[in-house]
Length: 331
Image (cartoon, rainbow, N blue to C red; front, side, top):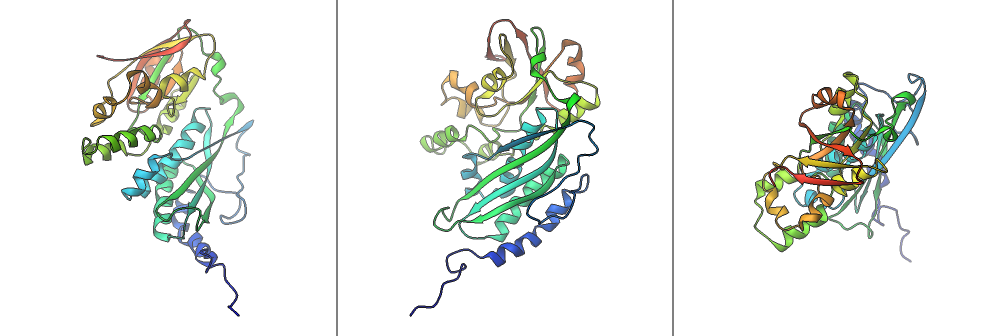
């Protein structure tokens, strides 16, 4: 009669997983320099004390890295994947006027790999430290037979908070308001299904250095929102430019009006090679086109808004005609 089986023989090692929690402790602790959890890390759930807020409103967001993850894994850019995971959720929290407080991650992997997981967590922690957000917990799931050996599944979840009076209210957007756009650092973490197809169909056209520039992590826009708050500017609306590009991410903010935009030519190395293979009408609906964040402000606040974080440009004005129309400068 065969011996009885163990969980480890089925491909899951719970003891190694438990030890990993201690191994990543240094990264967890460095995200708690500015804020601290109420209670200990490693319990079943994390707690945070909101008593510093007078009228707290909870804001939440979740996202992943999309198909960009395939190229990041192929090139062993695990820290970048961790940064992308944080930025995609934290930026969404920032659009509300809220503070990102807590971040949780889900990592699905075929078999526990401490080195890879620790590097992912290190990338997350780098960005979480930058925006004063706590790594409050997460889940590492060993999924033998479900997750392929060369694949890692990633999801991120962010919990933020805002004073009720500080919440951004897009209903206040009016004709004549100005749209200020802030530069992206790269293609960021959307549109990569199309990028990957172009790379497959036109091999060798994009240089290694150009692809490395495209794969830079998504920019965190906490510097923009922090500078806006410090200067006393309360935008009427803010948008994180992800899937759908400028038109779709902006059009969800207002009804019964629109915007005419003129954006600077995208200065990302090699980007014209990619865009030359994409239908002209589809470019602005797929990629951020060099603008990763937009704040809509009253005309009287434009000068202050342009000084909030690097890369600010006036890109347009709200008009009565519905829809968002995008023109590239010089095109």
